[in-house]
Image 1 (cartoon, rainbow, N blue to C red):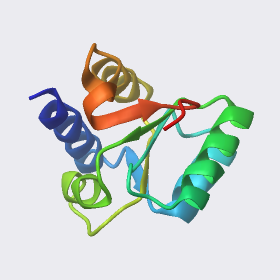
Image 2 (image 1 turned 90 degrees about the vertical axis):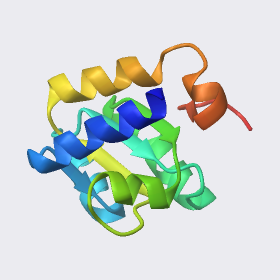
Image 3 (image 1 turned 180 degrees about the vertical axis):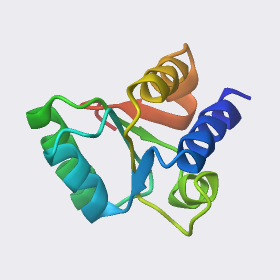
Length: 116
């Protein structure tokens, strides 16, 4: 149920144009300081996961591995997306709180820096 809430919040952010998606736009948002939260799909390539882990760590942006490329894309009304950045700080905080609820990341994702 909470996974649906995370995806619904991403959809709400997308409708309000508070989301950027795709590798290049997400990296750009992290670099220019507009990204408040980054979500990388669990089935993204290892290179993509490392890229966002390193960039977000350097720029102090919270990053989570969560969901699949298909689910992330569908949540924001697009095709497959391996990465999504939430721009709005309030929405990002609400999504982060949902992701950090007990059991959420154990079943559907992991925090930045957790090993497999």
